[in-house]
Amino acid sequence: MAQRTFQFELPQQASEEQRALAELAGLIDTLRGSVEQLAEAHVALAERVDALDAPGGWVPAGYCWRDLDADAARQLWAWLAAWTRWLVDRYGLAQDLGACWPAHPALVEELTALSVSWHHAYSGKADPDAPLRWHEALHRARHRWQGWDTTRCRHGHHTPRSGDTVWSQPWPDDAERAVTDDIDARQRAAPQPEGRTT
Image 1 (tube, rainbow, N blue to C red):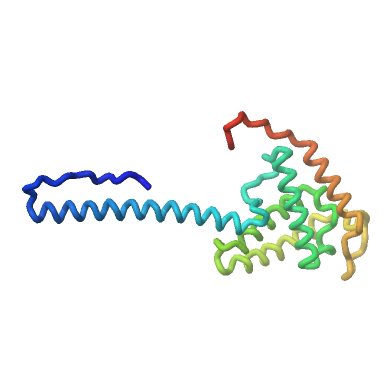
Image 2: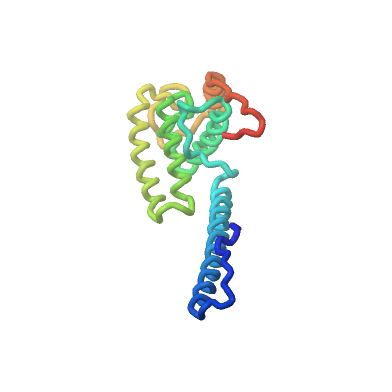
């Protein structure tokens, strides 16, 4: 809490009006200190809520693939691969999204945007209709994926569409290989001097 800024001593022969003004000024000063404490507590509480709101305390927002170093890319790849696996399982998207999605930059960007949007849509800060808007964005994305998939490379080879299409078992190996290649191609973050953070 900040030091009291009102420091005034009334002369002994102060009028009643001066005494009342001095008392009011002291109360205002006390109130200012209380408001400062509440503001600090609010900021600390908001930070705690944000940390609880994030899966594992990490939020993918604010990451742009073209700007990532290897360490940041590794963290985002891990989050995106897990989230995409959940998305495909939850919404039955194996027919729409090939298991080799990590090898397709456009799909990586689209899924990153969808994952960030999904995370926000289900956070405590989102508007009540944010989940509905996210589902509308997913619907539009599925149509784009079909346009991008000119090679029909689901399952690693061209296949006709069928209702029971699922990712083939080696998908994690293929995805991991694409992720490893991407991370290896990036530069490592420069070590920060001790005592300095970014």
